[in-house]
Image 1: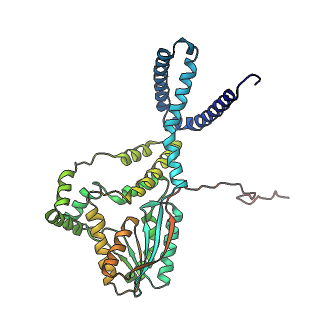
Image 2: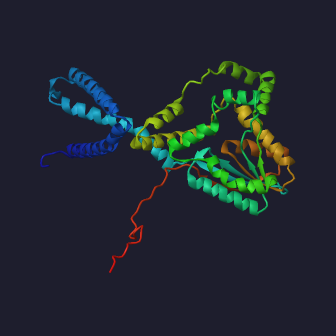
Image 3: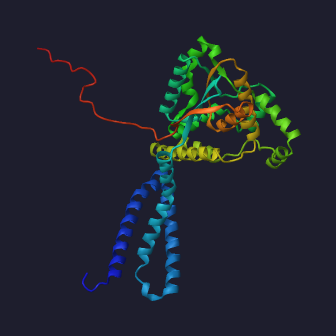
Length: 370
């Protein structure tokens, strides 16, 4: 580069590095357009053509004829940038699940007389997480713990009707979570807790569904309407939920999953796991309309049951969002409650599927007759 200034050399080097990175990101991003659906590729291409020509026209107006001959380069650059922009959310969700995964707490508490283990749960998650939880439950049984499970109990009639309309989105939650687990490529928690059914039949007093009924939730809802002006105003703003409930993002994702081919299902799994990871982060900060019923009321009932139970050792599997409220209520009753240990468990990740070769025939080789 004889005669080229240092500043020009730096510019050329940075340009080459930028072009290299652009090509790499484009090559990585392009398959997303084809996997999603072919029309997305053509939509991005058409949008790039329009935007590229618009950018080119504005540049010519502002900078004059010296830019002539670069129209094709502008169109290619615009297409590359749009492709990367479309694929970026997908790769962000992959990063979110793999590098910044949802972590669920396993907390041991005691006040010197009673010991409580609280295992935070997630409705759908990785198989290894549920296996570890079931293993811990079996170990707790062997150590003399009474097991508490989350699970809103049905009340046929007005309780179930209210819960279906207000809490379950107008459908069966178990069916919804199974469909969600299938779309995400993970596991529904109830499918693994069935492993405890034999133990529960043998020792029913050691296995407790420590939750409220749908009728109790409806009654608490009505009590709050009458006694809590802020809650009453919030419910008035919320209004009556439409019937049937309009589809949301998860519903559309499940509908797409039912019609998708195998590559699309893998892409849907990425989206689904990423959305769950983000939702779990938001669970710690958002204030939902029915939290005073779904969280606060159930927390109070759980703590009342815990303190009234004569068992000195109790192991709880409950939604992780309940933990802060439960600890606060325990300490309101007795300031001596303290946390002995905290262990964090990864609840969600990309399913691992390892494939290899085995140098052993699956069937014995028949010897030829002499």
